[in-house]
Image (cartoon, rainbow over all chains, first blue to last red; front, side, top):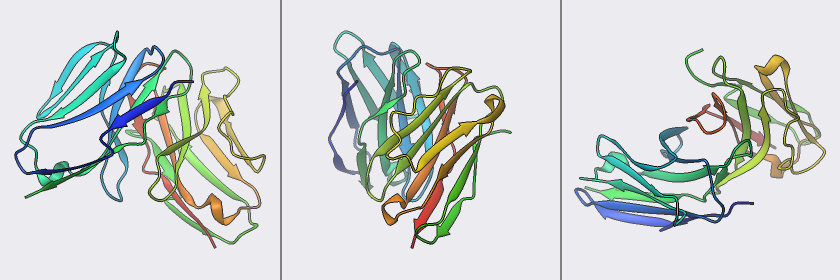
Length: 108
Length: 113
């Protein structure tokens, strides 16, 4: 079974800071998902990656397949980015395995 | 529909009663997951349906939990003889197929009193 580790568990940043959240996994995968969950809110998908890098607005996600590692970057962070960010990995038809999440607080 | 729909959004039930939670996936999505999230905790896998394959039930915490997916579309998660520790948000996620983007429902908040 894949083990997914996220770091840090908690992160507090000042508005405008560049933020990096990391995700490592133990077994080769076919896809990695970055998800966002606002307090009291539902889960939304930010990215699905199988290789390389994706960018959407101020969010950038990268994955290194050889190192079994992915990073989620937020540029020019804003208080509305405050949420839990969750990494999930999948291989073939096996169930997605989730990390425990990184709780981000961005202070104005 | 446009997204994954779950019902009810909230359910309060008495200990010992049975409950049924429903998930309407995005049309055409073959992969469907049930997860639960207890207060302040991460996501706990419950069950996974992929097309016509036998479901992966390895995450179900006890035999009080069961799920089915009729016609490859709507899924129901049934919890029999509910216990207080069953209180959680139950989330459904669907994918077009494995290895594609995951879409989550808003969840059903179950409270067992």
